[in-house]
Image (tube, rainbow, N blue to C red; front, side):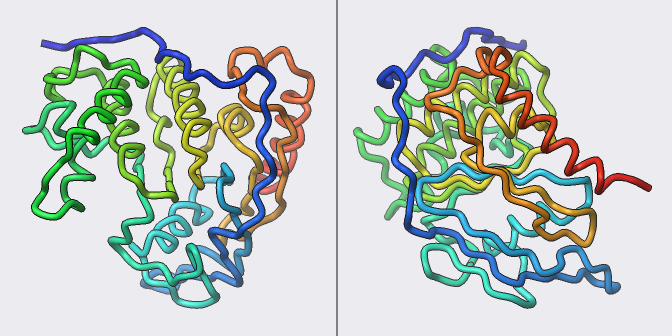
Length: 279
């Protein structure tokens, strides 16, 4: 049996025309980062950038330019070889509770329900695996926000791909980690589901103001989500340019298509990327 839920997540109330004050405190700092894989392949070469607290930063670049490697080093999943990397002033280390990582694959546990999967990240970090009633209620609210009310007891095998990604998104946001790393989490979804989840992500981010570093190949997605976009060179990857996205928040992704600035940004970013993909 396969279940489906095509409804858009409910709106989170945000004052009309509201904008956020520019963040000022550096949260993620990458300086002179280079990385070679076994065999001598140079994947990243002297990458440098910062992400300030509460900022939504998106990295775009050609395939194979080291974007995921950079994210894995920040998460402490890949050993840092050279340069300096810090998150909240500390060296990256696997298992840090202040960092949550959402992968391209949903990575749900097949023997757990939607609710069980959403609670899993908090459960493994809680003493004795105990979940408070308040956290359970927050989990239900997040499940509703991503459009999965009524599917709390469904198992992953009963869900569409998009619904599994919604579950993973709710699991990520339930964790209290102030820093979110997201590696093409919506890349394999159909267009409608992707737009639904992008809008849901924006609503959740507006609510919590987490610090987000997000990887995508989709320029439309990058512009819709980002405070600023980092454009990578071809391998070995470095940061070619940084493009601030000066568009009001909260954003309606559908309405952006009617904004001339959106198309100007798209042309500018595509021009920068096209120069890196010339063979």
